[in-house]
Image (tube, rainbow, N blue to C red; front, side, top):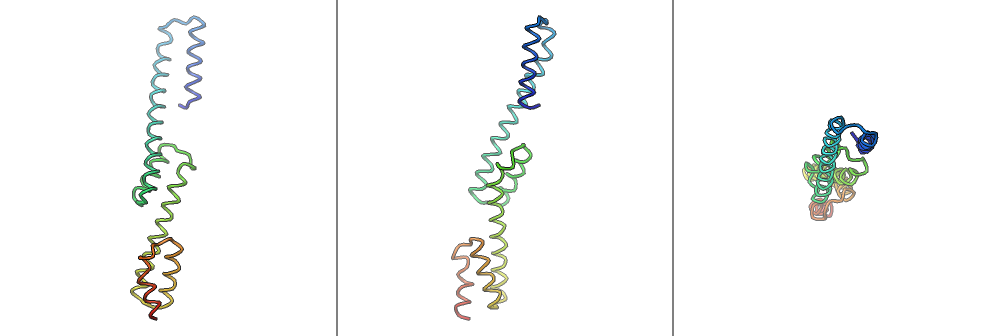
Length: 142
């Protein structure tokens, strides 16, 4: 039940009370209202926690944490735009992983074509200079 439904239920209970319905007749509706308000509050707490988890995971750039945070955010009903920053960070980390794998392959093959490709991909993915130093060194001596 959404906020509008809760507001409608509150309004209906108020109207019923104003119309003279006995308190006993309103008790079930009030119990449902309280239950729905508690559910809504719990969901909002879950969403707030998911937002914090997304922010933290994107900040520390941990792939598993980002994947879990995105899943929790989605499961909690966060809007797509609230997941965007973490999804972007996750994609960047996947690109870095792929670039690192290419660097390792190039370091094993030591062919200029592989080394150049790995160097370009590594730079494009945002690898740190120290991660590309061996590749650059091999190219410089080739």
